[in-house]
Length: 155
Image (tube, rainbow, N blue to C red; front, side, top):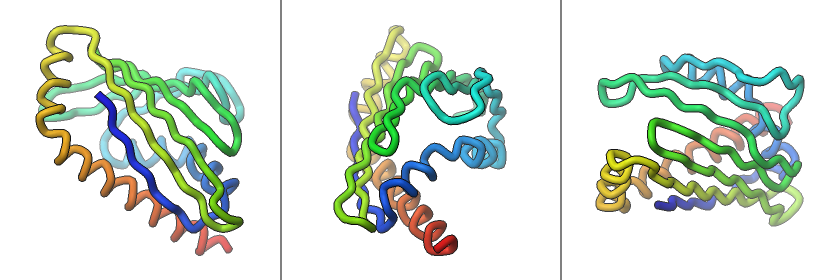
């Protein structure tokens, strides 16, 4: 199953990429929402190989996700691999400079089940795809507005 979204962000491409790769900020944000985040690498700066083990509760059950950066092409592309209890996902973030101050963020998430129960989950997600896509687009739009607000506070 694939989810896609596009957002235009009124921030230069370099700053958008810096915000996307501000992994410490993302870690703190996840921890504020109750997730347990453990870094699995010893890299001092963002790049291929940066990884996390993330534990959280979803629908009353504890979940574990292993995330790892698998592509890092500053400032154009970032890809993450997520492995979670029978599901593998590739999250691809691509940036395109539309002008000096306008950047398009394309996000493609490809979810592949590895087990029977994961296949059933993905099948039910396909049935609710329009609702899931709306929520995904809404979250992407909120992230884009947050990036614009952060950039405007800095500039």
